Amino acid sequence: MAQKALGREFNALALADNKWVSLSDAGGVAFVCYLAAAAGDTYTLTQARDAAGTGAKALASITEYHTSTGDGTDAWTRRTQAAASTVVTAAAATQNAMVVEVEATSLDDGFGYVRLASTGAGAVTALTRDLAVQRAPENLPAMAV
Image: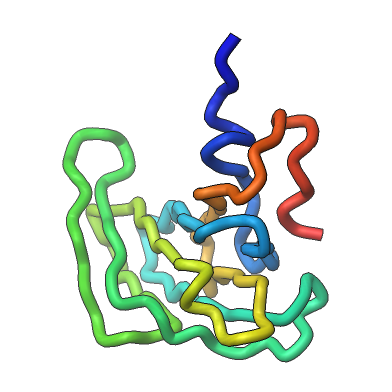
């Protein structure tokens, strides 16, 4: 039987808002966000040396992200901005889903953890991808320790 995608292509952390995610064995992470439709939100990207947040500082690497309605009725819309550590969403946005991707190579030397934090009611899921070591799902390391 063929190995499924979980453990081969990605690992997942469903409740990732403001949680440190290790990129030590991954090429990057896609943060999938669902925005609160009634209010705007700000998402802030931070990097750290370890899961305790040692040396935490802003990671100003977001130059593009994608949005959609989140219900499958429209295609993703590419959004661009000057390199920043934040993405600000508008109130009452009709495009309530957002994906922000972070490459492991964008972290400063000695840093191996990232987190995306919502200042509002937005939900964040993290999908690490391009796994260096492929494992059965039950043998994957915990993503937020």
